[in-house]
Image (tube, rainbow, N blue to C red):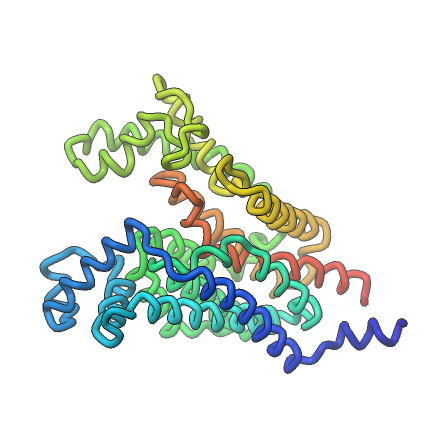
Length: 380
């Protein structure tokens, strides 16, 4: 029995990649069986892609006429699918999303292997990916989400490779960062996390679990306070800007927490304290795994996933601080997650928590890293 367990722990990489292929086929079958889905944003992308096609796919000419820098990649890819596959373009885009998901799962595994997480733990984590409601939902949407999620996991790999080898490939990081910027406006939060991490990652002081978690705890109260001040600054100085009014002020004035979910809203704010409270609730609710309209299975899987992430962070608190590379990746994932949550707390949290999808794979990474820390600590 002991020898059998040892052999499982020494699971070879080739079997790991076979497991990835099997897990991917399960997810892909589910999506292909469900079919693609067009949302209101999908139709907006589709219309913009039609305009790009009329300009013979001249992105520079198109950008001069329509301010689309932050969504250049999804619009361009939809335009290409329409040009090549005509009336089957949605199916082509779905296959593109699934291809990106497949490579995301490979990059997920390779990132963990770089920091010496054993194959057996990565194999177990594949089950969590297969059960993730986010992974089973958003790749079939004709949106930028899967593209964005792929780029986030890709930059996570190159950041990890950089600090493990003690040499960042700044050209590659800059290129991927540019691609991230041209995929979604909220990518600013990811770019901030990348720059901030690279700037301070060599200071050992910032890699101690207790210091990091205490800092995040403080930020959970400090960030809403800063957002409250920004809210009044924008209201006093830019209230005539209709876009800023719609994105940053109007939703707060309604007491909106989650977009189009009135059950989560609070009373309209009457004071600075009320505004800060709304931003605090938004920051907390960005990670909320429960919704009234979700099915029981959906809620159970979401709660299970969130509990595993909380468990992983708790394990890191007690067992982290001894393995430099694993601590760095843990820190980067927490940083990119908090930065993303903060951005959407200030702007908008989508009805189905769609904006959370790109950080799901990095957050799932925390589980095998934390278990590896326990095994290393006990010299298993």
